[in-house]
Image 1 (cartoon, helix red, strand yellow):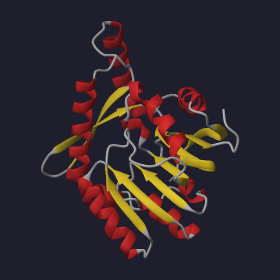
Image 2 (cartoon, rainbow, N blue to C red):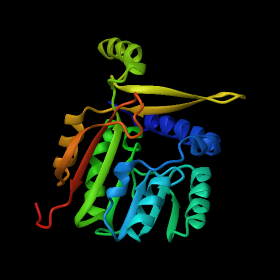
Image 3 (cartoon, rainbow, N blue to C red):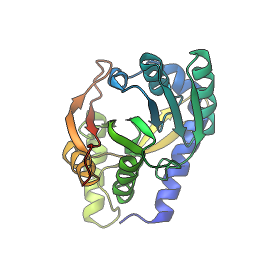
Image 4 (cartoon, rainbow, N blue to C red):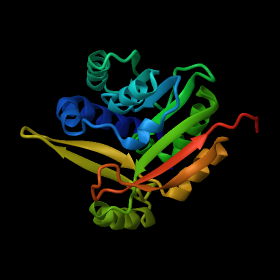
Length: 236
């Protein structure tokens, strides 16, 4: 089981790392994921937006309004600059995505592109129910997470499984991922889920799955899990 102190530590480490590497990270990953561009017109939430490249491009394509939410102040400052440069109407919010500061039925599309994997398993169900609440009926959720089956995780997965059996960790797919700069190395914490886990999580929260599978946005070797879901027009 994860304790609040453990998650707080992981969150602060990840947020501080993204804040420190914001400029370089955004310069390197400066293209929107094609899957984000299927967003529906209206109000778009880019959850864990970073510099909001996905949300801004989706809003520009659909002539929509985008809300960029990220825990890193540096990323949100970049998101504001990018939205202004692209002439896209937008709001930028610094907040923890596990506690959404929005009213129910606020968004036509929610983008969770490479962000849910920073949330530990003890909070994913709570977050999924929040996403369902703030999405309008008939709205679209587009979510991706890294696949834990990537070759870069093989050794760490084996070590994690041994540590789990020994009772030293509560989740076998918690990973520390490094980002190196000339001055120092920064750490980001990931919790990776299977496709079945992600689908079950969203279905339990009331979503209807439209499409699911594996996805490589830029023909790189890194593989991602994706789920596209909708909030039905009818209730539970």
